[in-house]
Image (cartoon, rainbow over all chains, first blue to last red; front, side, top):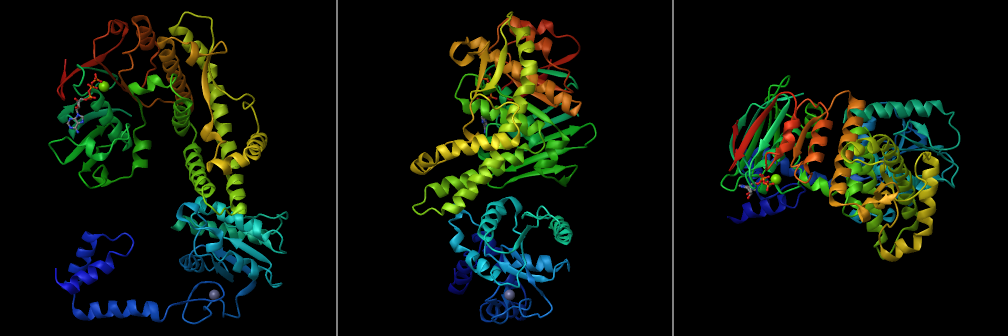
Length: 197
Length: 362
Ligand SMILES: Nc1ncnc2c1ncn2[C@@H]1O[C@H](COP(=O)(O)OP(=O)(O)OP(=O)(O)O)[C@@H](O)[C@H]1O
Ligand SMILES: [Mg+2]
Ligand SMILES: [Zn+2]
């Protein structure tokens, strides 16, 4: 096979879920498109490394050091919603039911995949939660059963702090006080969102 | 739900087989190696999407072919097709539209009895544990998920226990989760055993002239009629006591994945004292009790596929089995020899003869 082809194939094959056959099919497809389109794709990919950064505060995708949500003065700084991946933020945002801030863990604790709590931004979360303005941390870790132990671990870590911890899956706060109805409502709103995916 | 038409293509040694089964009882005869088990497997395959032996896909496809296909027509579903091609996944079609495995289970409830099941009473406790899991996955709606959640967390904990550096707090979290899920599994099993044991002695008595009572029980005492909290506490205590051992061995040593069950005949362990026939009869009695509970719960029975269930029973027991066989919507039953017990069969049935993978109505 000629070298430029081989180069692209070997790069494609490094992507998850793409083997030799799929790589060949993608390349065949690209070769039949006009060159502008292929050029745009390569520019878009370049932008990925040059323009897309991670927010220094919450871990969301961002154009600068701070993401749009963290720099928006209208967001409620009393709430932090914890998600495992940045993509989850977009999902929650699309419900327009949540006005607080986010925190991206970067995954879920899983010894099998060699992800331990230290590999995730859990200590960053507890640091953020120490800020007096933070009243509540909402755990929205997906998928639900796989995220369960990670949620339990975070609950333990947050327990010594003066914050309410609530869980999206149950729609009720975990703490002693169950009388925060607006949290329950919020939880239900999130629950509705779950059904969508 | 009944199977109207069945067409099997290149499934193991069944290269091209087509029948319209009886809507009641179908008896399948054939010598050893003729394809009886393969026939049962194929029915199980098309109605659940699963291979009951857990064989690799290539083994299911006829050696001289590169695909296998099982097609079935039902009363109110036009057609279900499960297609297997070498090197590809399996494909499920329900009325020409692609379907999922979970769709099948609710469309065609089927229960398959394989000859290996007869050894459930005899071997190690894991066999009886897996029998209870199979039954409960059918009878209790949340049990399957419960079990798979438990196993997923258990795997995490076992991996963690083997690491050089262990995050103690996360280990504690996993243990808490295993206690909660584990206690629920134990509770479900205990409830099921209790119900099962309401039927077992009587059913067993119909096979064996005896006043002795057959029971399937937890080896450990004191697990029946406990609340979730009590079971959690029990499990938590045991985990606490075995903490060092678990760290030492790098694996979880307590929990429902280690639960042991035994058949007791008037309190004596059947595995130690029972004859071969008694051991097999215990399994068959359990099976019949399960079917009673199934019918109670769903108001109908699944299609029964019974491979070689009579082979290890003497004539009297074979007859007792046929007499106790419930009125399932449809039954497929194989044997290598035409058993004299069949004179006990009342009502209409179809006899199918299988030879070298070719089936013929008699
Ligand atoms: N993939 C395959 N292709 C062709 N033949 C196969 C395949 N897999 C298994 N067989 C053959 O199918 C034959 C029938 O097997 P099966 O287990 O159904 O017999 P059986 O009638 O149940 O016999 P028994 O009475 O001994 O239980 C066996 O001889 C086996 O070699
Ligand atoms: Mg057989
Ligand atoms: Zn941010």
